[in-house]
Length: 299
Image (cartoon, rainbow, N blue to C red):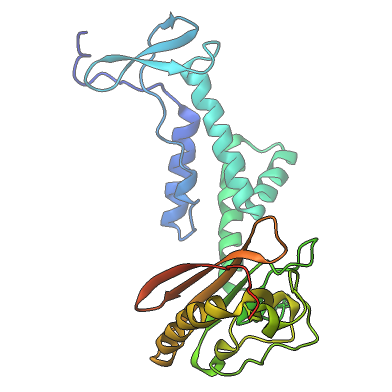
């Protein structure tokens, strides 16, 4: 498109806006504090071209200083001059909201049937009063915040040894423990009063033992049914199971923290058919062993 001739105005005349800007300029020279420039709406659309409709949207042909361009418009019923007047009104409303005395002074001037220019001057003088009061008034210290108290639950201490509960048949289901040096040798021997499932009635006659899932040498109790199963004494309880436990104890004694587990595996019998042992050390990795629990034999 052809450029506009140099020197030709590309903006819509807005006498009221120009008068308002000049009034603020004059007031500033006299020492009054002008409005917040964040409320500046002086960047008004330029040009006064024809409306164009593309699809469902309206555009106005305007000169951007280099060429005619199409600018979308929200409502084609208003001309650029009317839109500029609306923006000027919005600017005054925002100015009054920012400076209460400015709005009050403008309202008093309106009641006195003052001219628009006089109302604008009253508005600027009111803003100056607002600014003076805001700098001169003593600042109150902020009100102390109410401290919300929160009840912190007590820390839960994780037990060193964790046992599964007995199943419906009264059988021990397994054990996990975090082994550290203080636990070594802290356990107790199996109580003769405990009768684990599958017990034949006499350990020596039937080559049976009340076997610990967590050995007494690793800190296991011999008075907790969750830790006792019926094992063949020789060779299951010793040397097979005992040998694995002693190797774990050496790792713990050497400074490792070992996560240890013993899980009885049941078949059709009341006593375990095997026991799965695992040990995961903090430095030496994982070891595991399945120990078959052979049937007891009479001596």
